[in-house]
Amino acid sequence: MKIHYRPAEMQDLATIMTIEHSGFTDDEAATINSMHDRIERISDTFLEAVDEQGAILGYIVGPSFNQRYLTDALFDKTVPNKLSDQYQTVLSLVVQPQFRRFGVASGLLAQLAKVAQQQGRQAITLTCLKALVPFYERNGYQNEGVSSSEHAGEVWYNMVLTL
Image 1: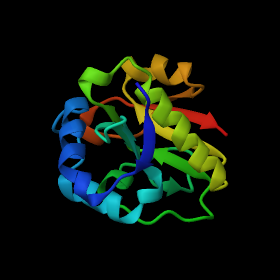
Image 2 (image 1 turned 90 degrees about the vertical axis):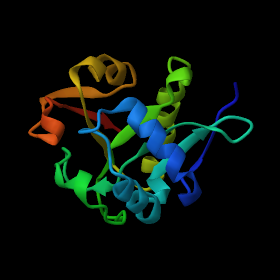
Image 3 (image 1 turned 120 degrees about the vertical axis):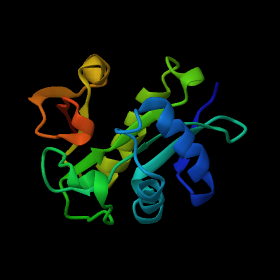
Image 4 (image 1 turned 45 degrees about the vertical axis):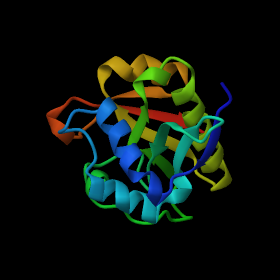
């Protein structure tokens, strides 16, 4: 399967929301309004993986940020990316269940890293649940301990990839 990458478009919102809910609980998942704002305001760092027919396999999204670790406020309000920000964040990385374990998520991480490097970012930062720490470590991320995030009442881990 050949995978292509492209910026998310508003016409993809319904599919994106279906994918979002396949990877996150209702408490963890972004709202449709949040995703709408992300497509509208940070499409340069909202990337889709698509197959040869243009079907969306998964996506990755996050704004630039000027702090090493994510804050819960990032999940609530989307502001446009700033050239001066040192970090690229990841708020959501989700692949449709039938396409998991085919390298789609790793490909999306690599593609976002390329964009972040082109934009002059120093690192990519994200939070994940404990079960996903090994996946991110295999993709070069360092586990920097438990996050202060209280998002969805879960325990999150700070993961950072230096670019």
